[in-house]
Amino acid sequence: MEGLLTRCRTLSALAACSLRHSSYLIHKCYHRAPGRGQRLVLSRMFQPQNLREDQVLSLEGRASDLTCKSQRLMLQVGLILPASPGCYHLMPYTVRALEKLVRVIDQEMQAIGGQKINMPSLSPAELWRATSRWDLMGRELLRLRDRHGKEYCLGPTHEEAVTALVASQKKLSYKQLPLLLYQVTRKYRDEPRPRFGLLRGREFYMKDMYTFDSSSEAAQETYGLVCDAYCRLFDRLGLRWMKARADVGSIGGMMSHEFQLPVDIGEDRLVVCPSCHFSANTEILDLSQKICPDCQGPLTETKGIEVGHTFYLGTKYSSIFNALFTNAHGESLLAEMGCYGLGVTRILAAAIEVLSMEDCIRWPRLLAPYQVCVIPPKKGSKETAATELVEQLYDDVMEAVPQLQGEVLLDDRTHLTIGNRLKDANKLGYPFVIIAGKRALEDPAHFEVWSQNTGEVVFLTKEGVMELLTGVHVV
Image 1 (cartoon, one colour):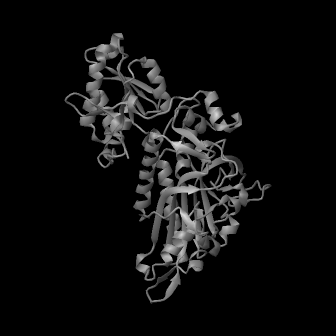
Image 2 (cartoon, one colour):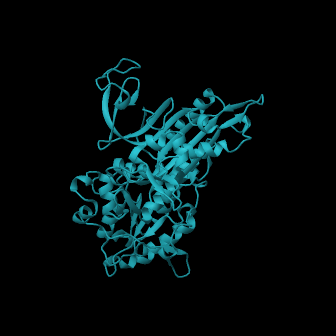
């Protein structure tokens, strides 16, 4: 118990600056307690019934398509529902986790000077023809014509659009640089074979940042700044990651790195040097290369899921669209650019892939849809007398721990046993589960507290529960 409490106390200093975001909660999910505030109850949640394995297969096709743990778990517990190949309905729990991830991304991007914008998904064909990517992207680009015959694509990325936007600002000064513009929007790619659920779909959320600098040296400094922000982001999420040298591909530029989560189902083959920590995607190396190019040590091979990609572009796009700035001497010069992507839905699915057990989802603590699930006794059981105590505990937590507003869920399905509801809570991966069992009838009452991420189970009085939850940090 002491270990559990100590870890949570270390977070208490951060709790004061945590944000209270409950505006996106559906009002009907709440039940008003007599004389108290509202309780968020599970029975009113819009959540599909748990899917049996045969139902999952009928929705997703061949059994081989469900070899990905995150896809199988997210389907089985109703976090996603297939809409069409490569496209999914994101259900309320998933949307909550996604919004939390976006808030963490916003914090890191704005901490380095990022300014958030929003560009249209529809991108005119002439922008892409100007860079030759209309043809270079091939069938991967989702294209369409409007009623006037004008051609567009649904953007998988926005280098052309953002460079044209900046180029339209004729009086851009060196004093405004570096300029870091980013967005978090839906992106589209005509995948030939969508698979692995949210890890490789046709429609997905991405954070894409575009930077404009006054010189090559300044652009590379900004490049390092953004890469460091990515490192902090993955550290905050508690994910093991690696930064690997990579090919620039169709985006182009002079330098590129991928941020990868090492995992066996990853589609990227990577090499790593244990001695000097060199790492690279094998696509930029000779397949027969077994020696590290930096220290001459042996290379080992692994697989990974790409969750981020960074590019130093130079003037590739600014020269085409004439994106200029005025320097201190009044001269007009081309801006040096970089672009930086994060697969938002992919990070969410990849985190579930690497953290979860075979039959239970585990979230990064910051992204869990709800931090706490409270399970009262089964109706008519010997412990029924403890129902009022656990509801009182819920209300007291809401009053005393303001950062948990909207984060504590009451499993009011009291027609089910505590065991069945605990099994569901375990599958959904709430960081903390509080149960009013036999010991809740003691004097003083003791509640069973499960810490799902550590596997610890402790019995705490109401005061102990309050102390524990006070240290929980919420974004």
